[in-house]
Amino acid sequence: MNIGRKFALAFAAVACAATPASAQQNPAAVVQAHVDAYRAGDIDAFMNTFAAGAVLTYDGQRFVGKAQIRRAYSTNFQPGAPTIYIAGSEMRDGKVVLSEGYVLADGTDICCSLSSFTVANGKITRVDTYSPS
Image (cartoon, rainbow, N blue to C red; front, side, top):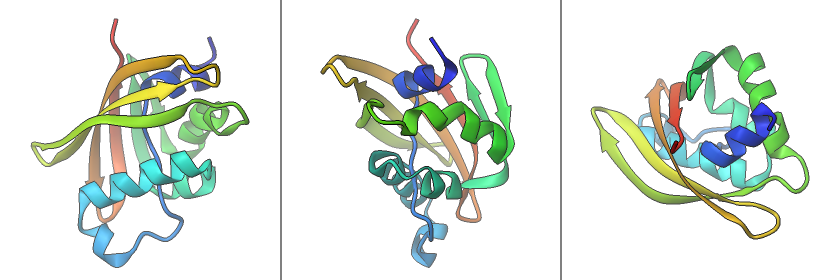
């Protein structure tokens, strides 16, 4: 299974190309914009939610910077990519934590992964995602 597909099964994410000023001070709003961009299939808006030096970890894999993160997610923005839903969310120690599920093109429901988002200055600086074993 390629890394993009694995992320589609275990990672939530999405954003607006221009994050409103009010959202810049609200981590939950930044993450919501990130999820919205993912749902819209807008990889440019999705990537705009990340800081330049953002770090993404996924079950032991590490991606640093927008170029690596974009490559990791590129498959998730192709036709037929899974759709995302949020099964739960909370703020924990200043981080936004999402429990995410995905629905594949054939209707298969893949639930759930857990992602912890660190946001600073209106951008996602770190995402740590864990999928069930």
